[in-house]
Length: 384
Length: 127
Image (cartoon, rainbow over all chains, first blue to last red; front, side, top):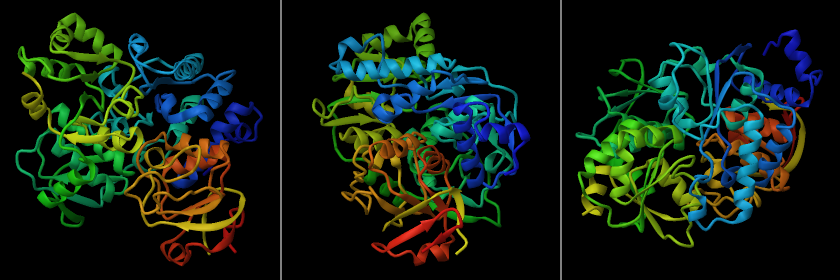
């Protein structure tokens, strides 16, 4: 990769340790993707905010970094471990709360917008078509490329952080152009959001950087986010296009057998002790949907609903949160189903959810069993 | 050998090889280096001090922090060899100073599980 004189100097440490580290990361990711140069980006979205996932090493790294580092472009951040307004309702250790506070402070000190959301594409104004951004959250990178007409690679926590600190990213792969070499033919009739999540999980396993999906003309927001979440969890694929199959590409069917395989991999229980909704976090549209689906019904067990702070505030003004709270929902912001310590295997054996991404992390990271059901089924079975 | 160098350095260790991609966030304990994804063929094994050979990283972008944490806890592999690149592994290794190279399919096939090797990720050779 060719660097400008200034970039070379930064890599050699002439402008301090922070930029040296940032450029070292950009050079590695640039070499990895055969980039010829770095290009400016307008927006970085960072992962690596939850103490549960980055641990002590991550907390210490950010604390040291934030002593002199400042972001150069608009930078938003992923969910953290809990909702600061409601943390006292939960039995979290003081150590966890302190370490999470330190991470939050470090990011704020660096100048990031404290969005704590995995759906930046739903809560911020989008830049114009074709704008280069750097999104680490995998569902957000896939959504940005496939739906929002932005350009990003499926960045890592560190490559997006390096982009935030330098305002640059390697010009490669999905940033240039990427014609999918694989077509997945959707063969399931009347798919719900879980079917799309499982399609995404299946596609992520076999696709390279991008994939063509044939046989789907449109999806609602919930299904689309479910697909992005599932795809980001299982693979390295960062983009899908919905279009008819082309003669020159390899074709694979997503049929009942494949659907069952994904379901059997992720569904490990026939019931849940609690329900969680939101991974990705729910947007305003889904909050509206949920409140109208409930129609006066109430949950028979605990139901945690995860949405960004900005969405909760809007939903409160419109009245959706009133309806959800009446139905017994616990509305939580700043965090998400995935990897929150609020779902603790010491208290809970199994969780009912419609999230494919959530299912993977609930099982593998939180260590609880998962009962997968589409939202319509959850409302039918779990409310009265 | 024509290894593609992503992160330079030299390393020694026993090859620990899998043909299944690794999700560092979901599947690896960041303090011990033990693979805790029960569906992975390395389940229960530790990647500490190994030369880890796997097709590529998958899943969460936060996996890069796992790689950094492994290094901070002295539980990291001494090097990583993959078939395909991904940004999580590349950036995690870059920050943690873990030598990382990409092998061609032929070279990858020749890497034998359990064999003691030296990786020279300066000249791009495995000895």
